[in-house]
Amino acid sequence: MSGAAVALRPRRVWRRPRAATSIGALILLGFVACAVMPERIAPYLPTAFDFRAVLKPPSLAHPFGTDNFGRDVLSRTIWAAQIDLQIAVFSTVFAAVLGTLAGCVVGYVGGWADAVFRRVVDVGVLDDGHGAGDPAGFLARLPRPRRAAAGVGVGPADRRRQELHDDGLVDVDLPRRRHRGRRHRVQPAGRRPGRLAGAAGLSLLSTLLSLRGVGVGIGGARPVDGVDLDIGAGEVVGIVGESGSGKSLTLRAILRLLPPAATLSGQVLWRGQDIAALTEPAVRAIRGREIAMVFQEPMTALNPVLTVGLQITESLNEHLGLRGRKAMRRAAELLDLVGIPGAAARLGSYPHEFSGGMRQRAMIAIALASGPKLLLADEPTTALDVTIQDQILKLLLRLKAELGMAVAIVTHDLGVVAGTCDRVAVMYAGRVLETGDVETVLRGPAHAYTLGLLGSLPGARQARQRLVGIPGSPPDLADPAAMPPGCRFAPRCGFVRPECEATVPPLLRIAPGHASACIRAGAVRAAARAEAAA
Image (tube, rainbow, N blue to C red; front, top):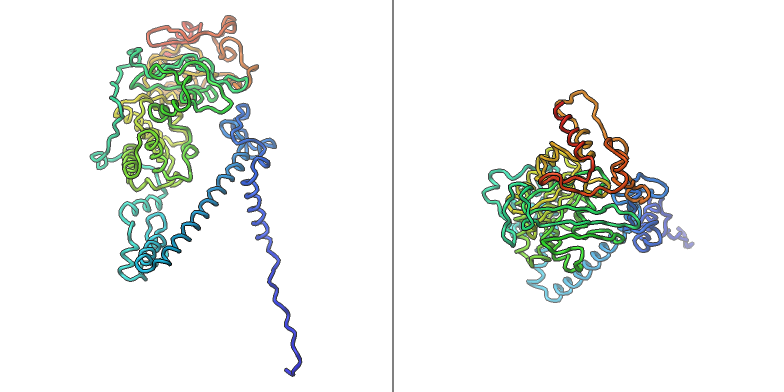
């Protein structure tokens, strides 16, 4: 060109963001807002219980529905964002500070420190966290000395983890013969109690736990009201009833794991000591150490951001003072005890890497960590298929026999009670209506509710016959005005008389090892015998 100056247009540095970028930024800002000020965004507190709105579907009041305690799922999700943000910020700051300090030290010292640091980084980069070893194919391009250093930690245990991961972590059966020879045994701290021949032999000296008039109040409601129950050393007690009968809340009351708004009344006598009257530090010494609990839904009970090994060692640290390698060895023994193969390699796994049956086994291992004398199992087979249910129940019975502990099982399945329990307690509307030996209660029920439960089950002699259900539905425990006077089962009972609605019938002994809270117990037993003879 001629000498004329050419004006160049400046390049645009800022470009208008795309729609996808804007939407992503808005989602991120919304997440941060939920994490920073959840109290202004969430419609409810995360611990606000409403037993009148249990397991409600999505609605205007609860857009995400409610859980099994009536808590708003949307509010709990919003409050959980705060924890996620705290973890993310802490992890970023910690990594930045640690990396900066390490880089400064290595840069200043140099030489051997630099060589060691680079080898450590190589090993960390080449391991994908599942023991797969060389995910990006870097190992083949390294010289032999560095290749050997990068192979650290990729052993048989890591390969076994990867095989389980690739296979979808399908649950396994109880330990095979080759595992049994090397199975570790967990010995409780105290002397093992002897097994009882039957519940009829239960005496004051062998009684571990006694509930006397135990009640739980939440506001004006009494979802558990006047529960009397004994659990003896070495026996298995089943607690059955319809949903909303107060079974799970009764187990939580034993360990005082109740909502903040709940009040506990009555006596919870553990070896003669009233847990209800103890201070919180004294209860913590019993909770997990002498009485342990397996909760419903292990996926929600287990901490998703902690490894299974850390969750087991937490109890070992708290109650037995085990730390470091000793605690991890004991944790591996416990996982092996409950039938998880490759126990030592699975300590570093997270709950989502386990199948449903394996998560339940891990929950049992956590409960057994401190060698308790009593295990409370709150529907331990919920959401598991039939074969895994059978494995879990057999596991509980085996552990009970080996460790000499007592077990209380909450279940809806009378078949589980018949096959696993020594005694049974039937609950309805927050009360125990009948209790006794399993064979006695199932063959000769003395309460109309127990008879109705048995009548609603299919039998081999009732092929192609319509099942007889219990009419009506249980009362709303959250509404005191909806509670019927006298016997709470009277509105649904086929044996009801006017006197049934006059007073609350007490739980009285009608035979050795058999008690019923029914003033028509004789008529019910006669009807049961006639039905069995038909």
